[in-house]
Length: 206
Image (cartoon, rainbow, N blue to C red; front, side, top):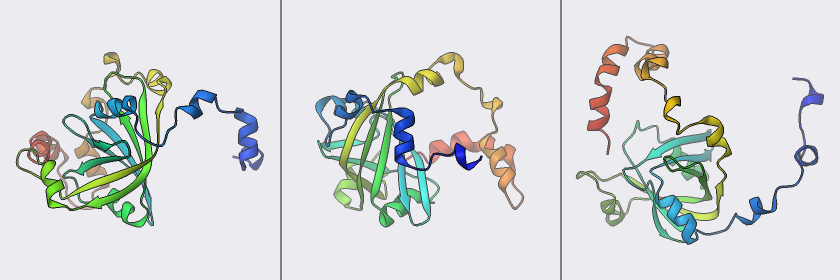
């Protein structure tokens, strides 16, 4: 890519794209109004973006029901459920508390975005309220909302994400076992890993 084909400043960018549409600005607010809250509470899935001393991270989060708990118009909570213990999100929060959330509602084209500041709680009373099947998370993340706004449906319409005809069969992409085997530095049995993955996920879900 040659230098003359690279955007290097805001003025160039603004000249290329023009001004933002007025409604794209006015829909951004500093709290969760009833409509935004209802959308978020319908979302069982979100992507969580953070930044820290070791770089950026974007992690998926899912829950049986709403992926977050709305405490009030400026505060939401979500449980850090069992995972692989990389703790990328939590490590980043301790380094830089800025956080961005993107919410998906199955079948709905619009998405919701929240930018805010995060902290990590180990309050036993709070952890208890997130208990499922007798299992409590080790931490709960609290997010104070700085900005909230919804994104129009163009991206999901283009992708056809919710279209049944676009669903990919498991065998059409590399399996988790195959991807682990490709990066393993020791003997690794991809077939055995994939064979037991469904039960393993169920056993470690919460």
